[in-house]
Length: 166
Image 1 (cartoon, one colour):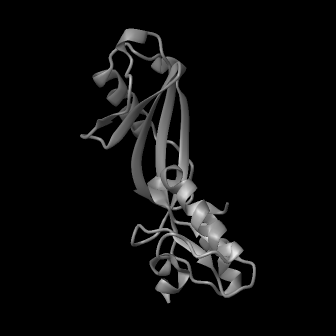
Image 2 (cartoon, rainbow, N blue to C red):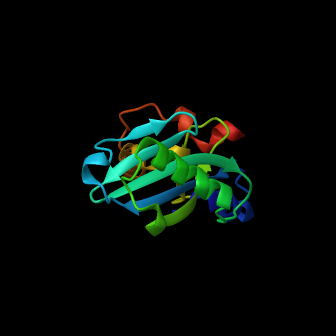
């Protein structure tokens, strides 16, 4: 639940956890041209941006920036997201009604999350999933639930442990 703030929260306990905030951006716009809107997810490979239909809305999101804990949304990033949508799906969404979002994705240096117990009884970690947080959520939760309950997880967990960072 601490996400990108995991490192800050664990530091007073003497736990070294290299999780860094990687900022991403998105806009969500209402669909105004149903036939012209995407049916499934499309990638704009030029800008590394995903364009996804969410019911009667379109979400355009992506980018990854290292740069602290700021949630600022620079005008340049806003323009890039809008440009991707209007270039690939002109007129499909109302960019004037866009809802903008920034988020900090917790990322480890090796890209692999940290899942499992710490040296403190009852303190477990499940963080560092980066851009794959939602993708890995169920599997990571299952691994952690198994560890907490004393059940052997279905996957090898050695490389997920905080101990890999010393």
